[in-house]
Length: 210
Length: 338
Image 1 (cartoon, rainbow over the protein chains, first blue to last red):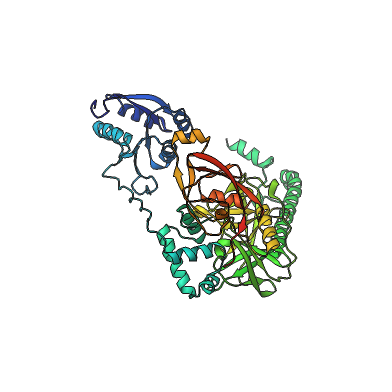
Image 2: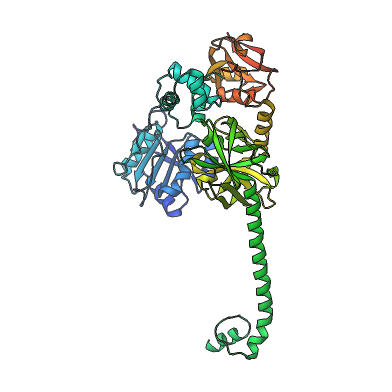
């Protein structure tokens, strides 16, 4: 483990965060026997957020079923801390698609000590680790970088100014169906589902002017 | 044990319809106060029910159904005798709609759709008196509201409560809402655009669908602001500067040097010809640091600032150009109509 922990910092500081006492004990047990140093223990997400805000450079280890783990995860991810989550029973049917990637390791209950240690190191360097028994969420779709066509931009600009589909069609001397077609294509490129979102996304991308 | 139970039953706990023989003095002894209490409770409940019904009926007078064709039906609020408001998201894109009142259908003209705050303003002669808007200053989380709307032929009413009531917030579309209101439980789709009335019968918010399937309340002050602007101009003004922007992350050192709190600034990637920005001399490569003294991280921030100043007035813009900061002002104009 010495090599894996990195030459500059042989010990890894951890915050063990879980609301249930037995889970917290199990997690602390897991951290024994390697170069882990349990800095502190958080009983609720608010305490965790406070610890992380103090700027301590620490990995977060949490565990339990998905529902109580979620708030700890979001507290840790808000603070950009690496997280290892050890999920216990009943998690298989849950939707984990919002957990995201990068700096997160998700293990099943009672992981092997070496697997746990490897997960801590991997999440600490920003990698994503998923236990093979837990289906990883689908990779987030890359937002398309395809620029809008000039026509799509014009249509979106007019629609964003509050013009109706028919009014946009009259303005550009095209059919309302063509307007809808251009809008649908623009939505697709911008990865949005409504006109308001499309206008905002296009402004953010520098496609529309303000 | 048996003795004590028998004693307890005969000495006070009312057990109606248990076939206690008439004339049993212990029953006569307790029945009178209980009967009186029962009568009071029943009449109070009847009164409460009647009050609730009256409130729902009164709320129903202030709302209409809106039909945008192809079976798309939602609700609207009678703001005054010839102005209606509804949710902009559901109305947007429509050319004309039909308004359903208790008296029948009337056509409506769409004046403006403000997508940033989800308020659309329409003109229609409904013949209804219009609602009285209350600043929902008194609205607290947990308060009951009656949400009223209208289907094609029937009125729709739901009792809900204010789940969250919070301070002013900015929507994802860059709209400024005077307070945060969410309603619970989630409402029927046909009630979108309908009014949420307090127990005094005053309008406190418009019910719309928000992100994550929440029911949001657009506060009445916000609606009032949009209606006033639209009625003044006859449409929604489109103030603009004429710049295309991209957010860029600044280095820590530059941020400290410029005294910026945020991490991003807006990089000008295009200036429209003959636009206010072009007139003021903004050019490609400028970094917009602040507008009206407020830090700008992206184009949406600028959009918000533009709605705060009257058309034709100058707005101060702080730029970073060629290694120095530069203060300039741009006259806010409306985008020329197409």
